[in-house]
Amino acid sequence: MIAAYWPMSGEPDPREALADWHRAGWRLALPAVRQLNAPLDFFAWAPGDEMAGGLLGTWQPARQVACVPDVLVIPCLGFDGRAYRLGYGGGFYDRTLAALTGAGRRVVTIGVAHDDAQVVGFEPHAHDRALDCIVTESRRIPSRPAPR
Image (tube, rainbow, N blue to C red):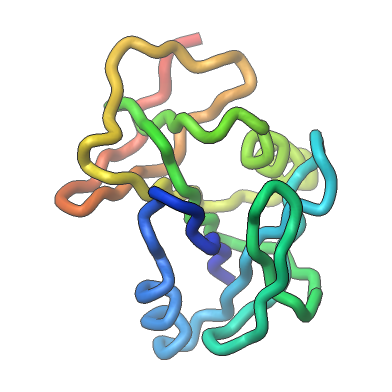
């Protein structure tokens, strides 16, 4: 199961890829922000399914069939050369990855960013983890975690 996201303004738009994955036989999910300071929930979704507004201006499947993803496609407002991401600062993906890991789930993480979103000089926090890779319009950046 691949969980991606419904794009917000300025984020790379994964909807065409979602449709391609659906045609290829993958099951799909989208995240839902159901409460602040909590992990994301994931609901099954397919192209054409009705969407509903969620917290913080997000969109989520109107039909709430809970599921657990095997692959997470995550929007990145920024990223570095080690595949650490910068998001909106709400910590939703950090809490989600911690919860999935704590439950014994190994989830493949793929960040999606614009080429010009790479930043230099930020240090990840102790709770941050490098994504497995980040993809942009022109390249793939593999994970190179920072030493702890």
